Image (cartoon, rainbow, N blue to C red; front, side, top):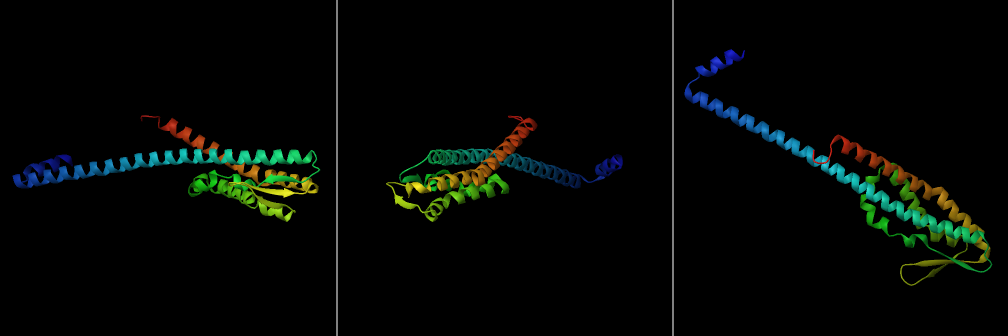
Length: 201
């Protein structure tokens, strides 16, 4: 087959052979451009995927830190109230301490559906913390700056302590577990990618 093709090619007039050679060179050049563009797109996609994983890992770590601080505060308040309170007492509006989530809202989708659902639920409960306190008989006291306090009579200590523990066990732990699972998943994915495509490859 190739012998017949070469024989046919040799039999062509000089002008036709030149045209055919130019056409072949152009086709090969076009193929090279297409292959190069596809390879470049693959490299860009691989880089973008890696950046998204790093961003998801950073986001999960930041939200974990914020929710962990809120959890510790709620537990500390509950511990103090359960030791006994005689006089009126005050608790901090937990949602007023939130700083990271509002800055990260556009990126929440990086965490995946399950983590987003549980994290949003946790923050939603914290957002309604003051309302829940008022329904239990608390009075809102606006403090200087962004802080806000809720004052209760001493008789409400056990109820507030129980509410704090329910928030921790009911939603905060769920959000933190989902974030931890997401971090492990992203880390495993990044590790797998680094093994398949070592740095510099």
